[in-house]
Image (cartoon, rainbow, N blue to C red):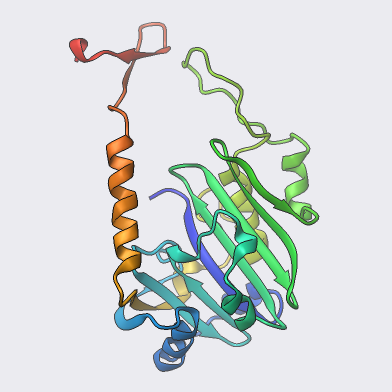
Length: 253
């Protein structure tokens, strides 16, 4: 699956101790809050999951839990190119609390996260190698500083010719894992720490959440169709005797 997240949390403070001591929430209470996150949408029960597998649900599916002093939601619709543009009704739902948004997508190496404290946006960052830095608001957190200082550069891939320098001073997913651990207390890929949260122990209720007008689904299908139509032909590579990679042309398949 790769490193993918679509997380929104409302918390009274640091959510990490809350997740570490998470217990199973009541489905009815959780459903009521899901309806607040997506007002006007059709909400139906779906299979439950855990935080281990639930950070990036399929389309129209949301995983959520209500904990002591915190709520956590996992939903692709919460991934925003500019995290600071979190809809007003969600910022209102987290008024007076800490709001955390974290999104990662390994296919395009995109990272976006944001934090509000008592209604004030403290930090928002969104970047990818193709899109560059789309948003960079507020003072970087301490966990970010080594990355911006150039201590984690992206090294060229061995064996590939004519590689351009990586367009960012670090890989977004590497920083994304650091942000995930600092803000939520766990990581998806990489070496886990003994202090990391056991994500398989955090139960999430599942809900199918759909737009009753069908407009959201239609727009999504249109975007998928456009992407397929404009996608170039697949390119294939083979390692040569000298250990370098060479593109394979169709007549040599």
